[in-house]
Amino acid sequence: MSRYYCPFCSSRYQIHKNRSDGVLVCGQCGDPLIKKTFLNSRRIIGVVAASAFLAPLLMMIFFVINNFTNERLPKNSESLVLLPYDK
Figure (cartoon, rainbow, N blue to C red):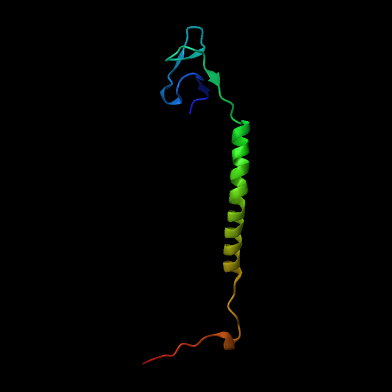
């Protein structure tokens, strides 16, 4: 994904070209390209919202797996169920 974009053209059909003075311009309209910022407010809010919904699910999965690994069989023989053995 490119770090530069043209605000006037569709993002699907952008062609980047260099002018003779070294400035990047759009291949369709000829306007100078604008540099994208890596972190913007929309992306930060999206990450916070996604983590708010996914954190309880991940914690639940962690605790369920933890309970299964820590579960031990009882040591007394009264709680064991004996199945009938047919010959």
